[in-house]
Image (cartoon, rainbow, N blue to C red; front, side):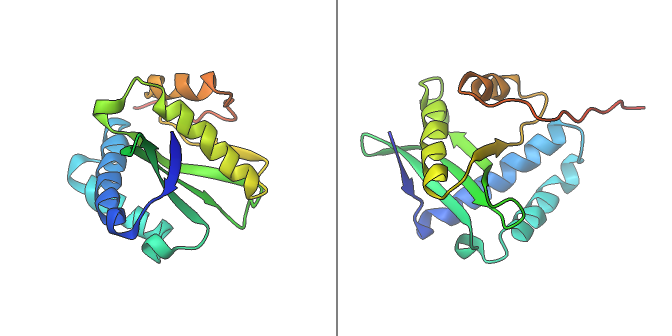
Length: 152
């Protein structure tokens, strides 16, 4: 596998899918209602990426295996914490899941982050996403904080 820079023409379709997936996660997590989720997700993404694909310090990659794109990963390095790459999105397409591509992509991203002088890679994971938590821990991520809620 290799990580290749996402091409601009693929960015828009990725963006639509990312908005939908983030909205879905927020609804499943009980933070947003279904009716408002897409709009809020789109607003948040547009805030994070004011210049879209051209937003500085944002890195969009596609996972390439045997000349086939099997997923994507998006990371940023902010001025607030310039020594940390923060993964904002990672996804392996359904037909390619459970083949280790996500883990491999995370390791490759870590190598890219090192080249950019980063000392750490971080990722937010919804607490209900046990599968993702397992994958991250398996390759060396450690929990740094846990936010919990009690619904009334």
